[in-house]
Image (tube, rainbow, N blue to C red; front, top):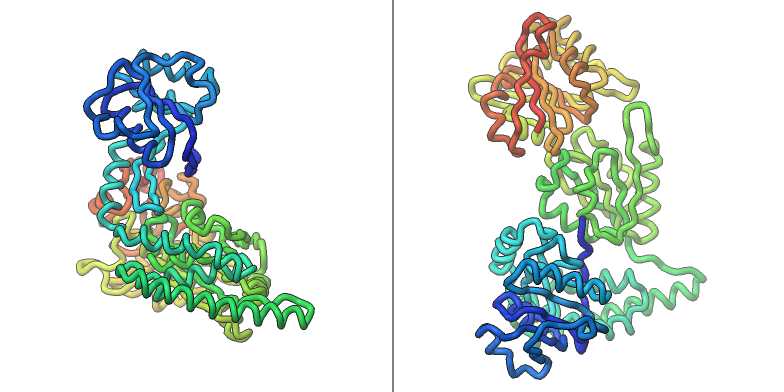
Length: 500
């Protein structure tokens, strides 16, 4: 993130606008709406200024500014018809110590102006850090059509009650939970429906009830000599295989409600950045042979945090109930009477297959798909090979990269055709996804040569042959790099790598 997004209070503050054209007029109009005292420096003003010329907070100086004119200004906006003059006035403002914005010149700006969706007092600002203002405007147009004006009324209602809520509920956690219940419940529905009077009355009643409950808990806590924590809960959320766009809407809602997030090694930064910013973060990631916390301690941690009254987000890669040990964790939570919710995620095999153009089932290739793990409690796992070696079936192997040689050899020892196609999808659905294809005989050698590091999904079955044809339609637009020559030293078998 290159620019810090802030909302600046400019009411009553002196601001300079240098330029008299349409861009300068739009800047001036916005500044006047937010309470700024604007001086426009330009030999003449375009007709676009006509509607605001009589505004009491606007003064026109029909000349260029001097250094003294910029002293004490809160901000300066430059928008002249001349690039050379824009650059000169930008430098003048910087020498005066005034933050400056030069229209369409992000390289000369101390700050940039976002595209704005105005639902006063609710404001949505969209910025591309100057990379593509057109894209920002396109996103603004979409948001304009999806955020009703009623959200402004709802924000105004909340604003009128903030001081009352602060006075009645002393705990920040209690206040946050109160507002979440209000906005997600009847009060929010009434305000969005335009029934302001009923929304106001319902909010007052909810506050009285919350204050009475809060006061009773506070008094009981004082009598016992300790504070009573609010009721905690655990959200077991599948974060998908890596791409943040694969999160469900429900997952995003729960991620924004959490007080603390307990997350695994496979959680991508792009996903973690969507968690409520103020939430405490606890890393418990496990890698083969390296456990930050044993599973039993992770379960105990979830119980302890929930008993402290916290809403705990247990964030897991893929789906928590598919080789994610989610079942073990909720068994412990249930045994300790800890409330929990489970939010499924897109499992790694589905996501990696879709993003690599390898359908797990296909009418001409496979009518069944089996998910297995290649890593057991003590390392290599002994699988049910009779069940796996069935015709017209795809096998998706989780956590098998470290044992790839053994797995491929075992398939062949158990009677599988050595030329059966197989693939490894490394870092699936992420920007650095790579796909390596080969056969049972060759795949391990190609994977070593390409130095795959995981996390990875291994796919075995004739559906792998579709990768070359279907990969261009996968979830991430691939940059194909067919590398059949990688297998020149491996009996000439077909193979390809595809960094995505």
